[in-house]
Amino acid sequence: VCDIPKAVVSTQSTGEGGGAEEGSGAEKTKYEKKKERLKALFDEDYDGLEDEAKHYAELQHEADAQTRLNNEFFSGEANRERYEGYRPGQYVRLTLGDVPCEMVDCLDPHFPLIVGGVASLEGQMGLLQTRAKRHRWYPKILKNQDPIVVSLGWRRFQTRPVYSIEDHNRRQRMLKYTPEHMHCHATFYGPLSPPNTTFIATQGATDKKTSSFRIVATGVVLGQDKTVEVVKKLKLTGTPYKIFKNTAFLKGMFTSVLEVSKFEGAMLKTVSGIRGQVKRALSAPAGAFRASFEDKVQLSDIVFLRCWVSVDIPRFYAPVINLLTADKTWSGMRTVGELRRARGEAIPVNKDSLYKDIQRTAKTFKPLNVSKSLQKTLPYKTKPKVEEKRKKSLYKTSRAVVSEPGERRLTSLMQQLLTAQKDSDAKKWEKKKSTLR
Image 1: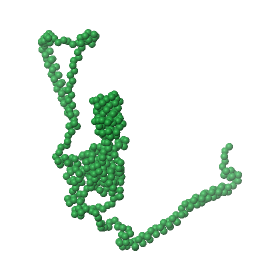
Image 2 (image 1 turned 120 degrees about the horizontal axis):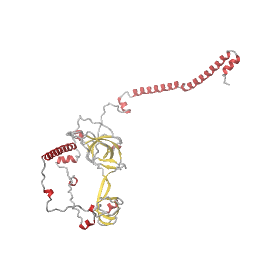
Image 3 (image 1 turned 180 degrees about the vertical axis):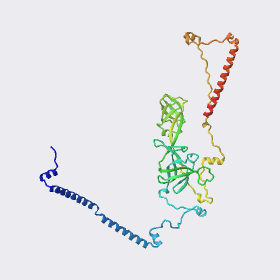
Image 4 (image 1 turned 30 degrees about the vertical axis):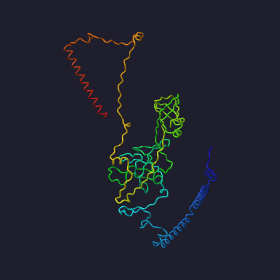
């Protein structure tokens, strides 16, 4: 049993060709209706474009009419400047008030003045936290709190930055010098600037005698934070003067009861590694306190207390005013190195900080003496086999050895070979030492 198409059944039943024509006409009617329906949908979507084009043309016509009216009304420069202001490229005359007299006396037309404006925030002073990096072409590293000239926004000023690096616990740890090839934080006092403002720093403003690259560092402003705290390590030492098992009284670490109260609960550690804790202050002597340890300490022990102390950011700000001088030079605060060179002073040397050669004397141990009574009780294999000193020499040590001619030749040959081997080993050792240097 199979399915037979309806068109074939109708053809066979009629036996005439007119049935096929009727079927094709029905299909045409079906396709025409579908085409008309799609055309109606298309017309619904795009019939409104002509209205939109007319509306756009009307708006354009109104804008052109307004432009012609503006040009006719502002035909004179007086009316245009009154309503529109000064256009770019025009010459204007500015009157500056409250300026120093040196600006007029030392005015040089070779140094043009650029007039700009600053935001209301930039007129305030405060602490700026920045990310800085030593310039790779500058030959030296920067020292903490050494004065530098910063060009930030519209201002150039001298300040004393404090360099720090952020630890994993968000602590700002002070650095004595800037890192060689990485960024660090620099906190200094100056006019507030918005974040992401870039700046450059130089060692001096008008130093023409320098033979190296002048830009010492570059950086970007991270933000203005009045609560920024930079800390550094502090190690306090003390000694015990009374010991009661695991409790000890210490002195020499603090100077008053108030200082002890600030450090109550702080962790202590001795040189030998015994850990402890600060408990309570004592009335006398001044600065003494009671501490407990995990083991008994000795009077000769030195006790350490490692802590962090905040660093004060210097509030130093000196604007660069070299254009207000006749010779266009300006000298600000000098670094410690420049002051020492000017005065001819040497760098102070702390003898305790110098490295010294360690000289260790060889220890000589006394010979082991076993008493005769103990030797008798010891087994034979552990008894000391020490021969007593003889007053007369033995026959073996005093007899003469007469060698044969062949034996003498062999002895001299062996001595020559050993001498050549020693000389070769000495040369190899000298060559190895020179390569290690």
